Image 1 (cartoon, one colour):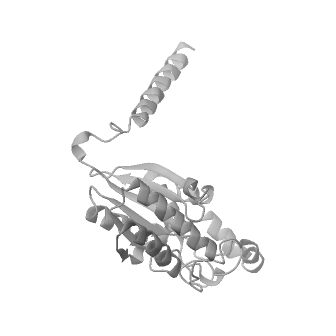
Image 2 (cartoon, helix red, strand yellow):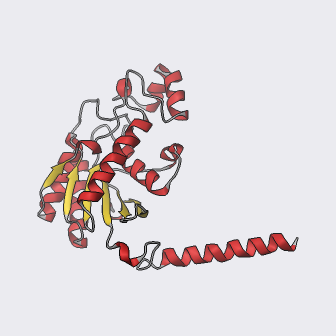
Length: 241
């Protein structure tokens, strides 16, 4: 009826207004008086020998270093970020692949690397070094539970997605306070980066399974003083082409 058409029209108007606000970055959603946001540029580490094999590689595994390809990816990310010139600090997860990636990028930017424990990858327990298929063969019940609940832990006392999210949120709060109004490069891993994005969007835990995050990709989130977040970029690999 007419009421439905009217409601649809009002919704279309609201959608247009929302689109217009997003398309005007200077205005965005944040009132001007909130000041400049803390912007996290999220760089996933370059490839390791385990990356192309799609093996679980978390905090509890062999802590692999970058492969030759991975080092090249880090160099390209560093060149790109140097050209952009916006990054004012570099913070890395303590694992070898992230410290190495951060070191290559920071050298290009003329910055030091700060290591932040809270940025480490999820601990995948007994699944470390295994492919998804191998886990499905060996631990089917644990895998199914993990795929359906953020509270389920990987076999052998790994870290649940809920525990990872709590750790990432605490790290986010600490770093946004420390880097208010500045742009900081966080060199970290698939699960923490997806978690930053998921929390910024207010998306449910299962959103983690619906994102593709490539090696040495860049994503970005801006955090305003009122606690609102704005996702600026996701899984950009144009610098690697």
